[in-house]
Amino acid sequence: MEKLFKSMKDGEDWFNKCFGKDETFDAMARSIHLWDMPALLLYINGLVDGDSLLSLLTEMQGKDGWDGEIRDDSERFLTFFPYHSVEAVKDQDDMLTSILSGQAAFITPSGYAFVIDVRSYPGRQPEEPDTEKVIRGARDGFTENIITNTALVRRRLRTEDLRFQMHRTTVNGKTDVAIAFIQGAASEEHLAYIRERLDKIVHDGLTMTDKSLEEFLFKQRFHPMPFVRFTERPDICAAHLLEGHIAIMVDTSPSVILVPVSLFHHLQHAEEYRQAPLIGTFVRLIRFVGAGLSLVLLPFWYLLATKQHYLPDYLSYIGPNDIGEIPLLIQILMADIGIEVLRMAAIHTPTPMSTAMGLVAAIVIGQVAIDVGLFTPEVVLYVAVSAIFTFAIPSFELSITTKVFRICILLSTAILGAPGFFMSVAVLFYYLCSLKPMGVPYLWPAVPFFPRAMMRVLIRFPMTADAPRPYITDAPERDRIK
Image (cartoon, rainbow, N blue to C red):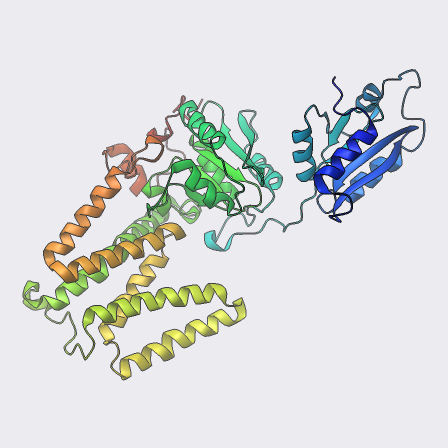
């Protein structure tokens, strides 16, 4: 093997050049002895497991751990170092990145360099994610530690075909990104696409981790639709890997990116598979209906309320009898945006206070607004129902996008009437049909229409039923039963 430095002193000078001498308290350089051999230990305090490192150094203080006939310090290090993860380093940039990643580095008197993996990142224990709760099922969830996240998936998929390919992106951040897939189930074309996009990322850091990575991978620009599915549940990630999807894990992020996906993937929920197939189908259909109504209910009611001649006699009760001083459109916009403001306020309010704040806003403010004539009762009713339908969408990204599209359809209806309503819905449908992230039609299997696949989208079939991997994954082996 090749020497990385001319001597141990040269390695110490390189370390001081990188971090400055005594300029940052957490960059540690310590002169130690491994058996009777002097060595330089380099690490970042707070990122290493101090107990493991102390145990290793204590064990190597005597002369009993090595054969005195071996004189080459690199061979002695690799042969007798009592740890399972020891790796020689041949590049100074790689060594710097390893140290910044939490590994401990050793430099021998001759200038050979080695790193050991004693990382211990600060973080929390796996907990059930708040946005993907289930009544029955596992209560663990991904954390901000990429090593923990890979272990949670590996625990569920005990197959030698499961792969985790590590990539390092950005210039300053050097963020660790792991591509997870099952060999033989994931498309090589999709994997090549992701690897190529990762290699092309030129940026100083991915501080927003998974969301920033999505924009780099798919050139999202100002497209409002989510092109990937985010999940914090290991069981959902494992299920998608078995279907031939690809998971992208970003260090420091508890969310995992799943690709490729269609619109209907954002409407799935783990609870459907924790119930009987009939009940799961019932829940799924209700969710689909709710998602559709959250988009069109409010604009359609506005159309009927302002164009009474469209209503048959038996529906003549629809629409307020007295609109009041404020135009109906302004009332709807104020109420709809107001609910969004309340949602944001609830997120930023401490948990013990958020419930009380929601009750005050919903009951007191809503009732007073009706009493003073700011809103009509029907406006409050339909805006609240639309908001409830929106909250039933499992994907937070899709629910916010639905609200934006709903406002656009409402404004188009207010300007052009019935033609504006149907034209805006048609334009939205055309826009969704035109989206093809990673070459996958966004509305698959509705457009293009795949009858059998569409049946599986609408109906939660029993697990015993033979189900090939989805067509959009382009899996080399679509048959899941070998």
